[in-house]
Every structure is written in structure tokens, then in C-alpha cells.
Length: 313
Image (cartoon, rainbow, N blue to C red; front, side):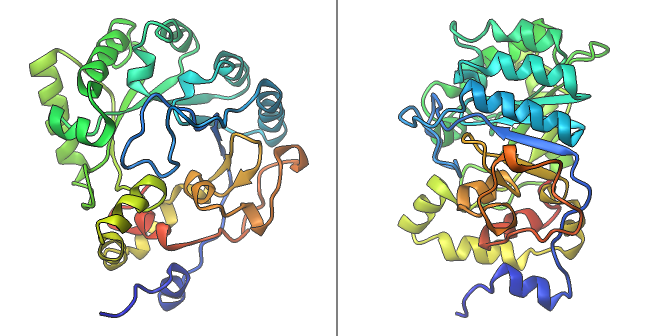
């Protein structure tokens, strides 16, 4: 069996390159601390991770958002809710940018300690995107840990009560589905229809959009794949599904990612892979504006995830 070709080699074979378009999205990872240790996590986030963005770096993020005139701030983690300075970032970002997304950890947001964030999010019309990998409790908890399924349902109920996911409220609630293992992602439209019907009929819950993403072979998921001798077969399947048409819409072309320490990467996955923006460590305080159009994007085997099938946008 031949080796999986390097992603850069596949690009050359198709006479393609991967370079930036106009960068309008500033993604911020506020830390690797999380109340869960999910099997598929590309960043290996978890309860023992000490890396958390401090208030001074958040102020630098806001200053960069102002200088760069970004159109969207995309806040992620870890569990962003566990960062004690999250409200500082939220309030500042909502005053600056037309659209702010929080990639919420539903189990953290539903906790007694953090559910007070929900009115803050609603007041500022922050878009909430939450991982809800399966309608089957056993599958969801195999990926994300015991008790996750019921606590996630509880959080969706709290968000619906606050107006999220309700027609005409202006409060957007989106869900993300990842396969439970080393499988290709299911078709998005059919999955969204199935989740919408099941959540409404079984639990009286509603949401706006559903996104289906494949698991990225990095971090804890890569470790599991290597231990089960599944890494090369999985990457090979992704490579065989390479879709040249998907390349135009991959998120790294219009997004720049800030790690918890303020250093820049092309995307959250390159952050996990240790690939810095432009090939050198660059702090947000050094940047006058967004990365220039046409700047090459660093690539690795994990990039097959975003360019397989319908892509990862």
C-alpha cells in the first residue's frame, strides 16, 4: 500500500495552491481548559490544562479587531465559559463587530456556575454554536464523557427559554455534529432534518442551523487513531475524498486564528499542529491589520479533513 501523498503534493497535482482571500473573521481560542476531555479533541483540551488567555491578551485581541476592521469574532476553546475574563471579551467584541460567535460547551454553560452567561449572550445577540454529536446518548457519551447527553439537552432547553433558536427572536442557536469515530461525516441536509425532527418531537427543542464536520486527525483523536492503527487508513479515506471545488470555501482563506497566548495561526487546526501564520511566530500586537490577500497558508496532512467531500467551512 502506497503512502498517503502530502497535502501540498495533492495541491500541485491538481494545479492548485492554498492562499488567503480577504480575511474578515478573527477566531480567538481563549484557552485549553475544559470540563471535558473529548476523545475527538484536536487540541487535547481538558480539566488539567492550565493554558488560559488572560485579560491583557484579550484587550490586545480587541485592539487588533479594531485595527483590522474584522466583520466577525469567533470565540472558541476548550470550554470558553471557563475563562474568567470571557465577559470582558464578549462585551468589547459586541461593541466592535457586527457578528460574534461563541462555540459553547453546552455542559459548561448549563452548570450553576456559568448559566448566568446566558442572559449576557442574549443581550448582546451572540450567536451560540454548540456541539451535539448524536441523538443517541450512548454514542454522544462515548465521544464526550458520562452525563454529557442529558446536560446538553438541559442547556438547549435553557437557551430555548431565553429565546435562542426561536423564530423571530434574532437569537441564533446552531449545532455541530461530529462522527463518533473514524468515519466520514454524514450528509448535512439529511442530518439537519433528522436532528430537527427528533429534538422537536422527543424533547420540544429547536435550533437554527446544523453543521456536520469530520474529525480532524490531530491531538487526542490522532493519538487514538495511532493506538488503534487507524491513522493511515483514516487519512487515506480523507485524501481519496479530496474535492478541488471545496478548496475555495475552506475557512482558513478568510479567517485568522489567535491562540490563548496571543500568537497567530491560519486556523485552529494549524494552531493544534504547531504551524504558525506565515511560517514564523507572530503576536497580535505586531499586526497592523489582517494577513494580506495572497499569503500562502501552511498545510499538513490534517488539511485533507477540510478539503474532503463538501469541505469544512
